Amino acid sequence: MALGSCRECGQQISTEALSCPHCGVPSPTESEEWIKLERQLDAIAPGGGRLALRIKQDIEAGRGQVHTIKGIRDQDRSLGLRAAKRMYEAVEQHLFDSEP
Ligand SMILES: [Zn+2]
Image 1 (cartoon, rainbow, N blue to C red):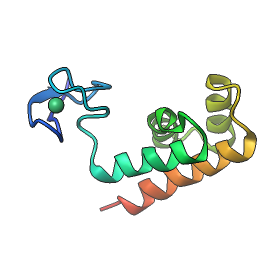
Image 2 (cartoon, helix red, strand yellow; image 1 turned 90 degrees about the horizontal axis):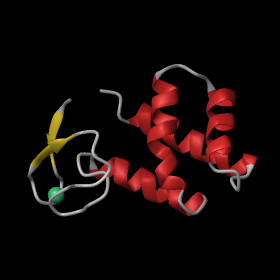
Image 3 (cartoon, rainbow, N blue to C red; image 1 turned 90 degrees about the vertical axis):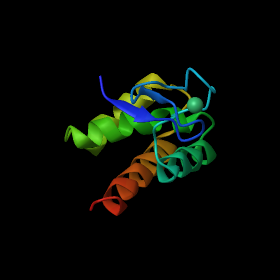
């Protein structure tokens, strides 16, 4: 289990923690850019930010756009195809921008 520091309170916590056990901030070890991406996805569809990590993992695993979009729509049945596609593209763009 990898450790990282919370962006809010600075405590050492698991990078897999969904929220900080000390201060409660969501996605505590993610960068500001990632948080911005989650907000962007939330703006596309309510609760969209929750899907960001899943989309990122699918992209990194090379699962492809069709598979990923089907996966997130299975997870959130109210999500339209266009919204899912926009989310996928936003995450893909984020990963592309954060290449070293
Ligand atoms: Zn914290």
